[in-house]
Image (cartoon, helix red, strand yellow):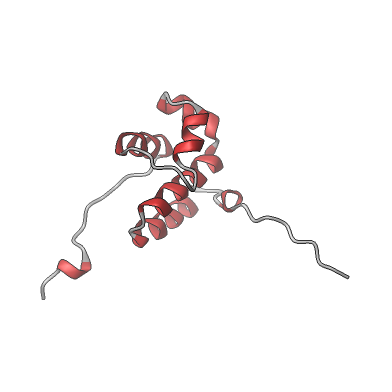
Length: 100
């Protein structure tokens, strides 16, 4: 008998701010701009894309397009979405640049 597999949606696991913070921290640590953008898109879907669209003044379609696998959101769009999601950026020294 063949097993039936379902598609995993990571947005379903992002149920609270701590989960979202851990998810985004992992994304930021990759340093991969495309991965970070997709991760923000997943968080936006978890929080409700319609609400994020309303909070940012951007259309849902623009948000889906910008944060898709092929998307390339501007810094302005990225910061607006992060603000709407309650995600803050903080600067810290990069480990490779820290001297002993």
